[in-house]
Amino acid sequence: MDLATLKTLKPTEYSEAADGYRSTSDMASAAKDRIENQIAVAMRNSLKGEAATAAVKQLTELGKNFHYIQVECGLVSTALEAFSYEMGAARSKLDAALEGARAAKLTVNADGSITYPPAGEKDQDGKIPDGGTVSGLTDGTASAVGRQAANFDPNPHHRLAQDYADQIAGALKEATEADEKWAPKLRALKADDDLTVSDKDWVDASSDMSGVREAGGKYLDSLPQRPQDGSPEDNAEWWKGLTAEERAAWISVDPKAVGELNGLPSAVRDEANRVVFDETRARLQTELDSIPNPPANEWTWITSGPTPSKVHTDEWMDWYRQYGDRSEQLKQTLTGMGYIQDRFDRTGEEGLPEAYLLGFDPVGLGDGKVIIANGNPDLADHVAVYVPGTFSGLEKIGEGGSHGDLGRGETLWAESSSLAPGQNVSTITWLDYNAPDSIVPQASSGKYAEEGGPRLYDFLQGNRAAHEEASGNVAHTTVLGHSYGSTVVGVSAQSGSWSDSEAVGDYMFAGSPGVQADRAADLGVGADHVWAMGGPWDDEIVRQGGRLMGLGDDLTIPTDESFGGNVMKSDSDGHSGFWDTDGQQASLSLENQARVITGRYGDVVLED
Image 1 (tube, helix red, strand yellow):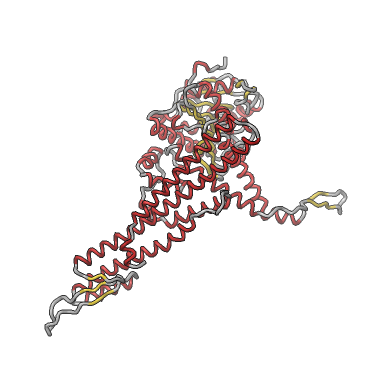
Image 2 (cartoon, helix red, strand yellow):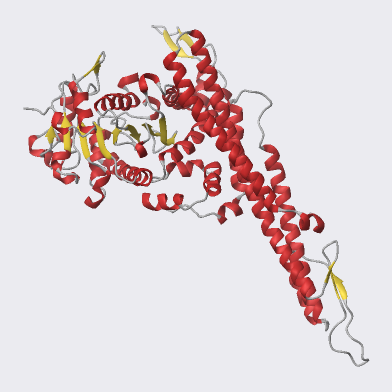
């Protein structure tokens, strides 16, 4: 970039363009939300038939288009802001050098060189040292040599001219590098010339994000940095202090980090995690599609022995050794993500509220990370957090429909909402720990709960902070642990000080093998706000097995009278029936849970 161009360049114009793209991103986000959570919902509830189904499907695709526009325009906005920042820094250096040269009565030439006049003490012949012209140097060694040479010149303007020429050259170099760096990045931020947002488009968006994040390091470093290992309160304060431009920049280039921060508004975490979700799903699907199909001749027979044996062919075994494990892993992960997408797509069915993706990672600590809310917990009067137990994982998160982990959250929302007319209820399925994958030895060990409990504690504190910021008060929050999930909840309850207990109003345990405590009072909310229920058959085996394995202190589990909590009557037929319904009629087990969630304690039916 030459001197004339940089002198006339106005970095603020690029920042203004960034504002325009950011506004477009916001409008696309609003359009997406309106399509998915209002228009499509109204059509599902009022229209039936093939034509209505096809129309809703088309609306869903349109919503995806707007989401893609939102993400890409956000990236363009951040890229332009970063370009403006770097050009602004170069322009400021240039302006300072030009002003200094002008004040020193030096002449700045069109190529950036500087001419200095004769000056200094006369020599023996009465001659004033000659003036001259110097060019700027950007190489550190050459620049140092140039300054040394200028120091020996009897003309005092030589050193000053060299300094300003170097500054001008440095500013031009920075501007040129910024232009060469950002021009291809900005040209790459465009979609295919069609109306379909494909997996390839989302993979490209992910690549664009990485490119902008890498290239925009200087700009991002200039922004207020998120707290390192900060508390939910620290995170909330950081986000609150950001400008709209700064918030948009962080979401556009690092949505994973934003989505993971406890204490941020649920709507913000959902927006960030939806980007991570869509880009991850496209990347994994693209990888799966690239794996060649297994050979058609999977089996063969060996007839040389006394009994014919059916075995895999050599060709199939070669394929399996190279691709089999990864192919199966990808399929399982994508199945789990399909359950989550299905939940998004069912918003409005039977009154189901908007879903908020508060956490997502396809790997997590081993089983994947899924935190999904029915309704906005920041605005809810009553919040319930459901923690699943052994065998839980991303690939199974929606398995079994209403009997699965996502389904139980929806069932709890529906029943609790029916008991609290005029109030907002939000139910959250929380899977952010490495759930045991076997009864023995994994589920008989407390180490999985010891690792997961503090994570749950931080999440609950984040919910409290976000709710206080949004609503000015604390929601009535119930934490419900099923099976080994109750052990996680018990550890969480004992992870902080009792002064933090306002984040949770009630603890509830279903089929609990123990909560790492021998008294309800140890959980910090008062024994009268601790609830438990059990069932027959396999549930009895789980609870008594946990007692023997030591998951409850002193061989005590929550359904023991000696534990000191409230033991609720249950009509569950076993370990997994606590959320069953008989047609439209909720079970007593489910009703009791909903009564606790909505604070209707006097209606809870206790064991005799």
